[in-house]
Image (tube, rainbow, N blue to C red; front, side, top):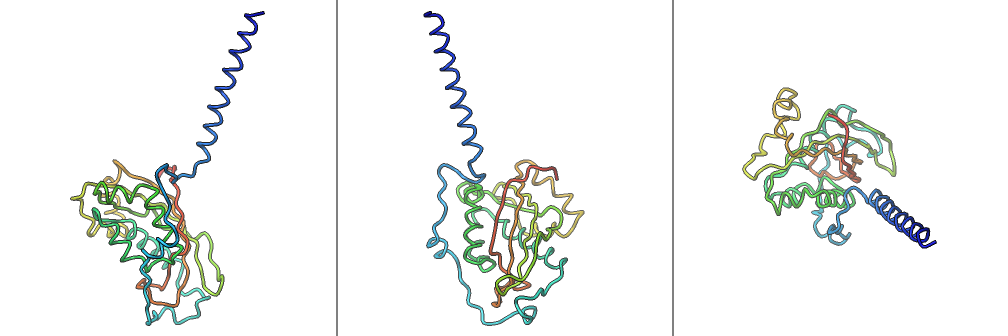
Length: 234
């Protein structure tokens, strides 16, 4: 009788351990990709203070058409996203804050908040500032249009791109690096620069036409920025 009770007790303990391990695994699986124990997302007020709201009076020639109409070709919007994404995700050592200030006009307030949240939660911000790493990025293939339409009085595009990002020692030069984006031979030659510590992200951005000249080529702003780790082969 005692042996049977002891056996049953051992079985219950084993079952309890299994349930705890399984439960912990399930909880771990539900944690968002960019959630870190010590990470705190910026508040709206913090984002608004950091966001450099430009007040432009001039309008671009391409914005002379009504904002709810498409004003660029598919090829132009893809090339634009390819260039701008590589630019906003490339930072000289400890230069990320300056880049954010200079390029905040490329975002709406909400888009800027999502972008800066990604930089912090992914660890890129800390690599660049605390560890003084240079961050370089290239866009793999041409960005694709997932959807486009006139919504809320402005024409909008939902775009997707695969980005290869890597930190380097502080003496790595970023000047001229983005030229590789438009030169297939140079891109292939220098792709090995990113192989040791590369990170691959699948990035989706939603662009909208704006009336103000924010310094971009086509008068566009990012209102949604979303990223997840890309597990596929390049």
